[in-house]
Image 1 (tube, rainbow, N blue to C red):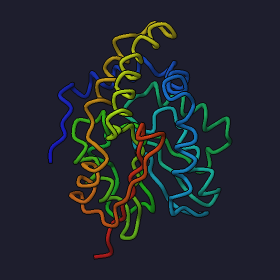
Image 2: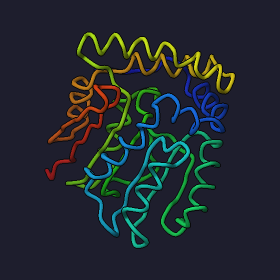
Image 3: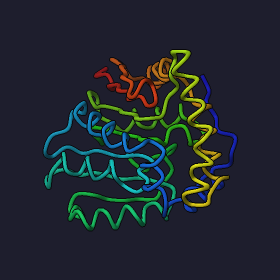
Image 4: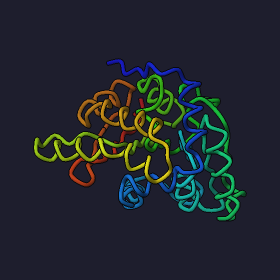
Length: 239
């Protein structure tokens, strides 16, 4: 299965640089604040303990990176990776405010070609970023490569409800998102693009197949808010 975003990567990076300053505000507005609950539940499913080593891809403004840093404690380490320098600048401020400079490293990089050797991390995460990369399959392969055998790969992403009535309501709501952002931050075009990538992304069951194709086993998923978002988990096998 191939999932390719035809928008050039530098244009997507430019988009996220433009929206960085409003990203947290709009994320709260678009998800009605429920993304915080999604992340809290996700953290409970991760095999993290004090001293663990985690990497958070497409880390954006760093909220999930900070949650990981809290879980691994001062003896653990977390890498937050993103291609947007403006997003990383905000994440850096949050890391400093939390006092997590001792355990968090933020780097500007490409999720499709991670600058790490095999078998480095206990957990690899990506939140609301897989739908915006040029090749989601390649990102999943990279996440699988850099976790050690027995390590977890987790993806929290917007999804597509399958129940027909719920799906119609979901589609109607997301058509309103660009207009909401136009009123809130006067930015219609960028959020229209993000609404499109949300609607065009694969279903939860298709993403299971992509996890398995990347070499992960024990793949499972759970949905949130009638399918508005989905958490996928997989493990790198021991052999």
